[in-house]
Image 1 (cartoon, rainbow, N blue to C red):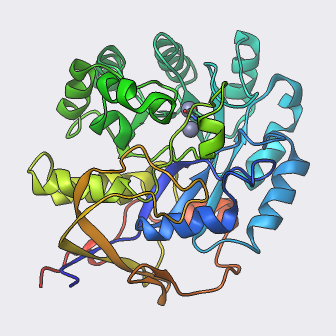
Image 2: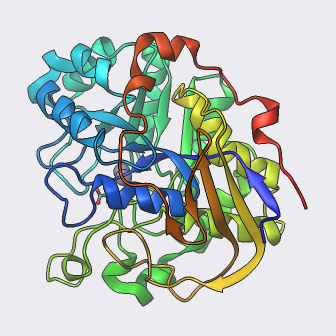
Image 3: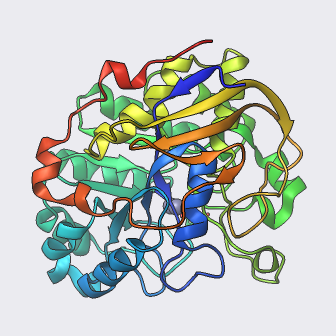
Amino acid sequence: MTNLILPGLVDVHTHLRVPGGEHKEDFTTGTAAALAGGFTTILAMPNTTPPLATVQVLEETRQHAQTAIYCDVGLFAGASAAHLDQLPYLATYAVGLKIYLNDTFGLLRVDQLATLQACFERWPRDKMIALHAEGQSIAVGIGLAAAYQRPVHFCHVSRQEEIELIAMAKRQGLPITCEVTPHHLFLTTADAERLGSLGDMRPKLASPADVEALWAHLNTTIDCIATDHAPHTLAEKQSANPPPGVPGLETSLPLMLTAVKEKRLTLDRLIELMATNPRRIYQLPAQPDTHIEIDTAATYTITNNLYTKCGWTPFAGMTVSGQVKRVVLRGIVLFEDGQILAQPRLIKCGEQTSPTSLKEAPAVMGEGEKRILAL
Ligand code: DOR
Ligand code: ZN
Ligand code: ZN
């Protein structure tokens, strides 16, 4: 029975694999997984094949998304040295610019200072720059935020020294924000050993001390929980050369609700981390008449029976409390009792990126929209 109503959640870090990786995930399966996990807005990463690094690819992908999504989707543009001239045009279609400072899945990677400088000079100041930055790359990102005096968002922070450096930089007043993933909050190197390639992602799982440090910063330094939903097929993960990445859209909210039950964070903080802050950081417009309904008493074991096309999760076998019963987006029930109700169709994609709607977007959700109903 539903006993909790929350705002539609926002995932600022999802890999939807379109174009080029549709056998792992596509717009329809990825946004179905989003709804099943309580997300009504997701922001898709650009490390596709080809990457979302040219106006042509980004625009074609956006057109395609409009015919195939169940929830709101924003697309990131990817930074690459070969297409710097296109950055101002890419900005018209993208919710933000993603810059990869370290090696991970896909070919997008920026390792020249001159390329970074061009990105920071040409990308519009009112749109976010998100960094895949591990280890000392965090210091590079902090330096750029300071030098250019513009907002920078750090993806999937996972190590104690990283979060502590970010905390210091925030205390100095730098305009930086950061996210952590549930897999970095709930799994450690011991799980990586147990799971083998199914527990491998970038950044890799960390030590118990690192995990403890992330939890210690959850009420202060950390701005959002992001899934880094990175599906790969089981066959790929079990191959001789497994790609890094794990799915997360359908497991993130139950894991975080379980942590609320265990009093590791408050429900109000969960709402900030998974809805209010993500929306504010990326200046996403409010979704009127939108909420999710949850049965917090439902305790169940996570299985591989999921909407994501990859069909597995590193959390299989874990017991969690809190099940999404219903998702209502702009007044329409899209998900109920485990079923997707609507056909794929144009819901909304792209409008949120136009300069006018960005200006009109409220900074935070209205009090009424994030009200919790305890029955
Ligand atoms: O583990 C990861 N997988 N980390 C990333 O940064 C990329 C992602 C992917 O696209 O598979
Ligand atoms: Zn990344
Ligand atoms: Zn990612």
